[in-house]
Image (cartoon, rainbow, N blue to C red):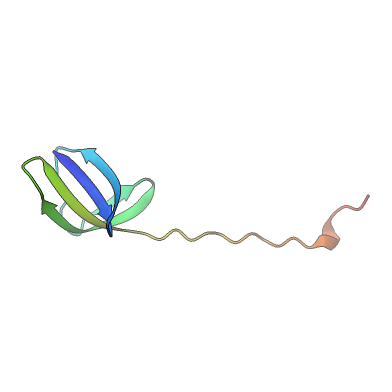
Length: 72
């Protein structure tokens, strides 16, 4: 069965799977946590799954103190 994972209207992943995820299941897609919002059977073999991916927060760089640098 072909399973297509969508976030909003953007396709995130498509897989051939034996099982279809249920609504509310927790998944890991491309290293990010996802939660299944809805499952829609398009054809006999195709399933469209709407997921909500966890937002990735970027870590801010630590501002180095210029006085601590070694002077030449």
